[in-house]
Image (cartoon, rainbow, N blue to C red):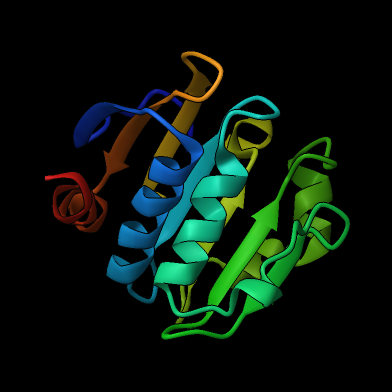
Length: 161
């Protein structure tokens, strides 16, 4: 993705608590289908982990299996649908990402959650959902959700209305 594309659909909301961010994740996880790609952006402590744990729960992944893939780059989960959770924090560029085999996983019979997508935005396919989390207060987080493409727009509408 070159970064110049405009989103098909955009929503902004504020989650008042980590628990609500988790609940939003559960709802998104219940809606995911094979081929869905969700990129997460946000500073440390912005709520990405709460959202990811919720998405995994909603996708039927046992909570005991949800871990940070920071050192593994990609971590697979078995649930209602296969779910791959990736973390690009430690990667420096697209070539390094390419060498991991990550790009072979995009698309297919699973959904993908990718943290730190802003570090290597080219990792995203043409159609994807991007969620940017920001601190609003000690507990509250804003979520800017952008859908690129028809399926991500339908996913956004089903998720947030």
